[in-house]
Structure formats: C-alpha cells, structure tokens
Image (cartoon, rainbow, N blue to C red):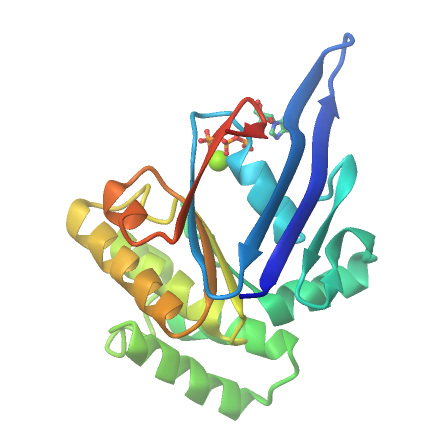
Length: 223
Ligand SMILES: Nc1ncnc2c1ncn2[C@@H]1O[C@H](COP(=O)(O)OP(=O)(O)OP(=O)(O)O)[C@@H](O)[C@H]1O
Ligand SMILES: [Mg+2]
C-alpha cells in the first residue's frame, strides 16, 4: 500500500515570555497508508492536536515537513494552503465548530460555496449529505437548537462536502453521550470502509478496536 501522509522530523516549539520554551512536537516522523484508520492517544498536552493541525494545514511546524498526497504541505503559501485544506482534508473537532448563525443546511453548504459551486446545487447536495447522517428533518435548525450528537453529525456532513480523501477528527466524541459517540464512531468507520484515510484522536477503546494502527504520544514524541 502506498503512503498518503508522510510526516518527517516535525518540531513545534512555542517561545513564551521570560525565556520559557514549550516543546509541543519533538522530532515526530510518521507514515500513514492510504485507506488506514489511525487512532492517536496520549495524555493531555502530549501534542496530539498540534500534530493534527499541522497535518491539516491549520498550523505550521517550527521545522520538518509534511507531505499529503500531491501536496508538500509545509511549503505552501497561505492561498495554496486554503486550497489544500478544501480539497484534501475534512476536519471534525471536539467542539463541532459550526457557525451559530447558520442553519444546518448552510453550514454544510459553506465549503461548497468556497469551492465555487452554484447556490441551488450546493443546497441540494448539502441536503443529500444531511440525509446521509440522518438529519434530513433538521436542515433548517441552527446549532443551538440541536443536540450535541446532532451538531457533530452536521460537522461530519460538512467535513464530507468536498469529498476529501483524508479526514482528521480531534476527539470527535469528547462532548457526546455514549450513544451519540457510538453513532459518530460508526460513521467514521463507514467512511473508512469507503476508502477514506482517517486520523482520529480518541481514548475510546471502541474506536481503537477498528483502528488499523494505534499511535501513542508522550511529551511531543511518538512512543
Ligand atoms: N498556542 C500555543 N502557545 C503555547 N503553547 C501551546 C500552544 N498550543 C499548544 N501549546 C502547548 O503545546 C503542547 C501540546 O498541546 P496540544 O494541544 O497538541 O496537546 P494535546 O495532546 O492535544 O492535549 P489535549 O489532550 O489536552 O487536547 C501543550 O503543552 C500546550 O500547552
Ligand atoms: Mg488536543
């Protein structure tokens, strides 16, 4: 199998006031095969989110490189980075990160707008995606009018809008009750079965049991 993600010698340090330096990533190298489902575990502060953000082009390393598919992510400028994120990555966050003033339908359609899809087409496709995650009867609800599990399903539909080959999920079930969490994990598993490469930060053993690989982090490095 060929690698879709190659992380080479990543370092990320934060220089704080009064000469304090925080090492968030310390020489992390990693290869992830196309179609893998990788779970990342490790204590709070071990660098899990930092790694995901750099792989997803939301943050830049202090040194080292990341290659994802055809993109040499760490060498892209801001504009190229936005294109990379839009075409390649679907993000799912612990706190959903939906736009509160928009309906479920508008939230899911937003990435399609950024891709230049005409309005009627993108609303139609957003409806289709919401149907897939079982929310066809909530399309005009705003996030505050929905449960946590429903909000996370909207976030998943949004992550799928541009049909990205890679999905990065950072504790996607962290704010959910057991049943909703189960539902979200089941969706991730299905997306993986349909060929998407998935990296998910989670401590949940129900997710790690589906994993093709479990990565453990401690103090900014891989164990
Ligand atoms: N913007 C920042 N400025 C300074 N230090 C930061 C910043 N972001 C992260 N850090 C530090 O980098 C380290 C790694 O943070 P990170 O968020 O990657 O941890 P994590 O493994 O995701 O933890 P958690 O399980 O709590 O989400 C932590 O020590 C954190 O304090
Ligand atoms: Mg984190």
